[in-house]
Image (tube, rainbow, N blue to C red; front, side):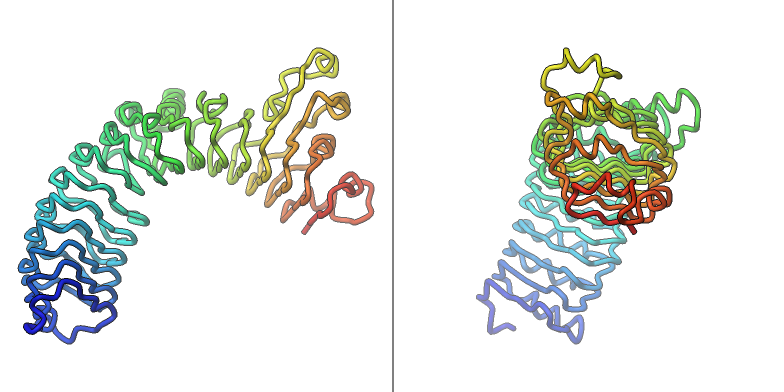
Amino acid sequence: MEKLIHLRYLDASGRIWSSAKDVQSACKLYNLQTLYLSDSKLKEIPRGIKNLTQLRYLVLSYNKLKEIAREIGYLIRLTHLDLTWNTDIVELPETICNLCDLEILNLNYCYGLVRLPEWIKGLVNLRHLYNIECTVLHQIPQGIGKLTALRTLNRFHAGNDSSKLGYLKELDQLSGSMVLNINLHDRADVDEAWKAKLMNKIHIKDLDICFTHDDMGRTQEGELLRNEALEALQPPRTLHSLSISNHNGTKFPNWMISSYLNHLRDLHITRCDILTLPCLGRLPELSVSYMTRLSFVGREFLGLIGDNDTDIATRVLMISFPKLKVLRFEMCLWWTEWEDITAGEESNASVSIMPCLRELDFTNCGLRELPHRLIRKASSLQHLSIHHSFHLLERYEEEGSAARSLFSHIPRVTVV
């Protein structure tokens, strides 16, 4: 290795290092600027790593590292550090915060990582902190809020002994996709949700809000706090995709049922205690699953305010879900009724229902009957799919039956 003293680039990925001494020899290449040691079965980083002070790019992904040597703090010119798929790392050394030129820290799939260094605010040039599937990384220190140039933070745990949502307040450059795992315990957690000011993070396009724990109890106060927490998590109006899961409140926030999210392309609602579905706007795709308390979907879901045919004469052109292409319902076991439109609304040209809908799917739902007029009104529907929904199977399974003939205009009907 000494003969390669002027080497600046070394890719030793896939090489199985026979001993720590063997790895140590690579640490004598003092002029190295780029070093790949990916998938090399490394169990430790040699202390001699501190000699590579010219290093800019270090890749240690797909190894068996359990800890990162403190000496990594000597690599003050490092701009890119990749630790992807080192599943046994629990924490990073505080000395990593000396890397003031570091722009990219990749921790994706470090499943065992629990905490980030307390002095993380020292990474003043950090732009991207990748932490996909770091599911137990609950302790991100308050200093993260000082990294105002941060553009990527894939996952953030908040509440109780975890980090606080308020740490995100100044991180308005965050972009791309983000998962928020939120533990709700008391009023303080709701206040933190307001402090986060998600609506200012206009570069975030995909947001997943998951309530992972809830200690508020089944009281009226607890219900109000749950509803307020989701209201406080108002995303930027430029959002493209939104997923909400495990929300134990009983209603949607105002920002969700208004036209605020007019750039939203798909919405996924999973395991929420919402009792009914309001009109959810101009979505191209909507998925509703595991809504255990949902029993009735009324006319308000379509944005129809009147309840009789006499309202039709005075109604100007109304288009319900003008962009919706895919609508899916899954595991809504207690949902028994979907209110149909009236005969007048079906025949009236001024009322348009889901004009772009191409796919309608029901899987494991308790619905007893489909809204026939509504489905006929969705004139672009190409595929109606019913899977493992007992009452619907019983009613529509037999081909040629009177019930099945109601959907003869649909090119493809699947009932299994």
